[in-house]
Image 1: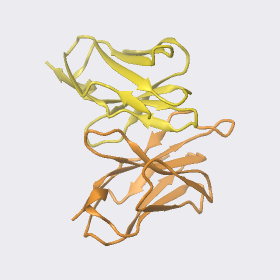
Image 2 (image 1 turned 135 degrees about the vertical axis):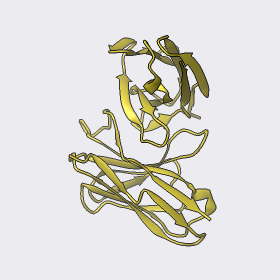
Image 3 (image 1 turned 90 degrees about the horizontal axis):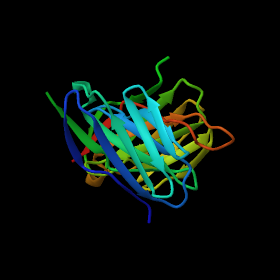
Image 4 (image 1 turned 60 degrees about the vertical axis):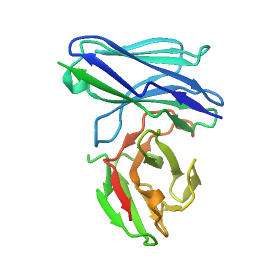
Length: 109
Length: 116
């Protein structure tokens, strides 16, 4: 079967750095997405990786290793507004998105 | 440019009732989809469409039907609601390149449905 694993919840301190991991086992791979979802709101797009390596976008970076079935989202200089759930999703060989359950990130002052 | 809109935002149904959730997008996207989101689970695809008049089943289609008569609208119907269909429903749209969904999906604000 297809599986996406992420930690359920993480806690970090304002101003710090946090890394949210995602491991996947899917039938084929056509890219990996990270989305942010604030409580009670819709998911919004953060990043897309299809090649190995690090993609940096402001305070957020996303890393992919296809051989290891692994990705992480790195958030720097954490702000209170970064408190949200972070969803990892993989595009499989049929171009269907398989979603992880999400990681709830709690930021403390 | 409203993006993706959904109506209603909230709905309470009794078991056995029927209803239609509406989704509209003004971005001229070919691909549209309906997801449900339950606590502790990832988003699960119910049905999707790659163009007007073309729909297909996702991961959890049972108990739902869809209609896409126009490119900008995608409707999700519950024929006979059950408590197991209590969930948050998201509509999403995406442009397509070379016939494949490779881009980010844009989500509507969601419909919170409770079936008693």
